[in-house]
Image 1 (cartoon, chains in turn green, blue):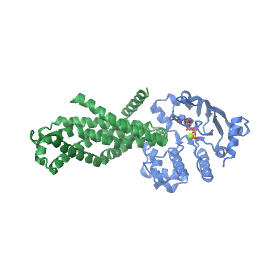
Image 2: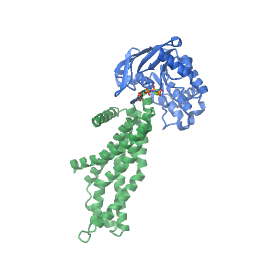
Image 3: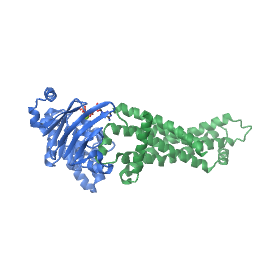
Image 4: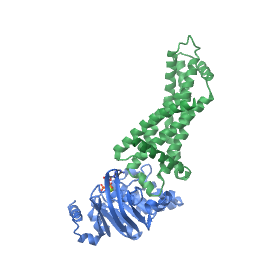
Length: 245
Length: 244
Ligand SMILES: Nc1ncnc2c1ncn2[C@@H]1O[C@H](COP(=O)(O)OP(=O)(O)OP(=O)(O)O)[C@@H](O)[C@H]1O
Ligand SMILES: [Mg+2]
């Protein structure tokens, strides 16, 4: 029952956000600030995630495959394709569910319990336009950029690990990766990250916006926002794979 | 003119109050008093449709707040300034920008004009120097005064104050009381002041709304309040006289 009520509230909030998306001048400043916070400030953690995912995957693939049976370039193929289709988007998504999701829900939750949202409304602002719209829009726009960053760095990490560990030289890694590179995989990854950006920012906005009950309430909202974001990233990943692959 | 009629509000099974009816004439200063947790803040939020009641209505110049469309409501809300209990300053921007905030979005003033208006408002609350500070550097009393400067910047018709003097020393409380009187007289503002400080009620109020036992317990003028023998009201006033 509670879950249905919450879903109803969530849908209503998104509907309000959608209706006011045309009031660009209200949220312009906030949108640019969110581009920086969600996009630019996530680049270091995303680069780190990408490099290590690629590196570990390369070592593991080499360990699991017997390269006496397969050409050694297959390591590059497997690592490249896994990263582009799945890992850059999903691992990036989970990391950002923590980083971006927690920041948004804490920020909006604190604004709610300290009556800042009431203050906005009482001045005649539409607080949804002002707070929710720029965050969700920035998520939708920046997650694909972060995905591309993660994927590129992931392949770099794979190349590096392969070379350093003496598994295969960079040229062969790239040859293998190129053999099984399909542009539609990149499109698939971009679609995924786009959806994750929406899922994470909208859930976190909803949880923060509807927080109540002081510091504890904000804590609860943030916990729920990050947990739900992770769950729905994994769930939507599965649904997208079922539909698009 | 604000008319509150038969208002009732509950959160789930928890009734806050019912049978709340009173009216506020233009230019009047009304105090809402009652113990902590009796729903004074909730009542104030209804006056701006920040919360909706279970039943009943609040009419502003004859128009029911709760029946307005959202865009009409936003226009009506702009006639109000609210000082929230904790100031409700936006902590992501400076003190100056907090006060300038409504001007930037709702007027076409030039930068110098905004600066002039903001400094004027900060001067009214005796905080000329605080503009450059971040909101984190302000004390509780300063936050309230900045909140007040922000509430009056668009020259509202109605000012709603949620406990403007609670938690302040007597001297600062008096300054705030003076300020409320000054706003009411010089800017011709209709004020509603939530408080449990009888001292400020006696200073500023013309009418008094007393909320007790989940209903409107008593409503009348200040002179009537002094004469009243309504037991819960008498108890409330006696109890506060011994507050230090
Ligand atoms: N958003 C909310 N959700 C659920 N209950 C609420 C909410 N806001 C207030 N209440 C409840 O309504 C009642 C009245 O709260 P309110 O804050 O209006 O009291 P108050 O008279 O302003 O008290 P104080 O003088 O301490 O500020 C309390 O029991 C409170 O728990
Ligand atoms: Mg209160």
